[in-house]
Image (cartoon, rainbow, N blue to C red; front, side, top):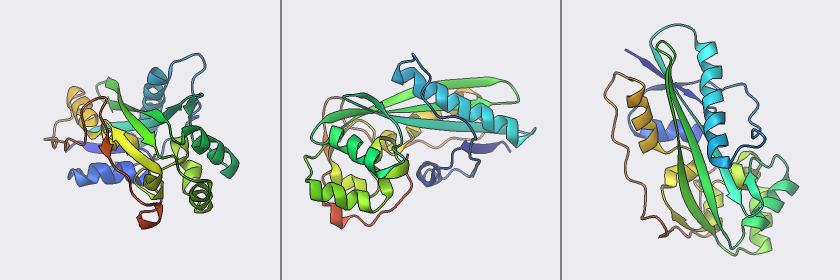
Length: 224
């Protein structure tokens, strides 16, 4: 049996795949996730996913294995927004996104080390943020969730309360387009039957209402 390895430390990506019934092993890639200079965000997110897959391939050793990797970038009015790392930077990012529409890009790479077959792709979703109050913002920042999330929020966590609507696949915003991932795994020759990912999408240019009060969410952590 071919082992499926997820090149990620994200519990939410792991959870998305496990919900499809896949048995996976996770290995955290040790790479520099900085955006390559002079590369557009669509390509950059795919190249980072590819670098993660190859880094993990070098560490898992020989044997029948397929590796799946992903990376997520939020693109605001100022350009790509990565993980803020500090409360002040998270505050700046969320103020930039407040009341505005932005794009979330999720790059995916599937790699079969034994054959050298690999495929990369990218999924895009649009997100509109609520015009949330400064009190709501400070409440969210105080919980610590934004620090390691692309764009400074986690739609599957408390950050979902800051989101007004999503156009596109919700799993892309969480951090992994499962439909794209299953297709790429099939293309590199993953031999076991692959599940059909649910259609978590709405028509392009439309928004599915996802507004939730911040205080009502009981999810925590994880995410991009």
